[in-house]
Image 1 (cartoon, rainbow, N blue to C red):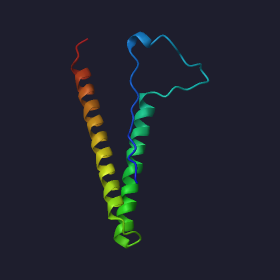
Image 2: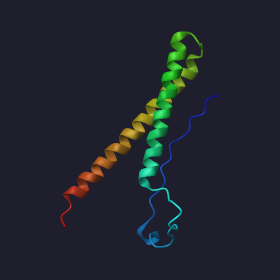
Image 3: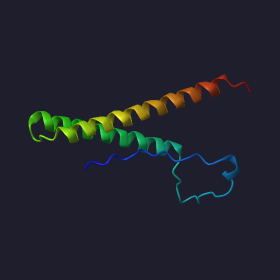
Amino acid sequence: MNQINAITIPTVPSVRDAGVSHPSDGARSSGFMDSLQQAISKANDIQLGADQATEALMTGQTQNIHQTMVALQEADVSFQLMMQIRNKLVTAYEEIQRMQI
């Protein structure tokens, strides 16, 4: 059975936690940009897997239409999630631009 893996985005620490722990200069923490890039990469990998499953079905390499449809749905859901994340980021950016200093 094909398992659908979720795209997880870590939570942003609160302002109270900002000064609690700082990584040393040699250690690199995973920031928001890294998490976003990983999520985009994962969504892209899922899309490529769906493309490969579709191509395999069309060329006759596989007859499993169920697995192909699951891969296509998984790719659609991950794409929709990335679109919603993009929309939220654009909305947040526009809100920051409207702030008066």
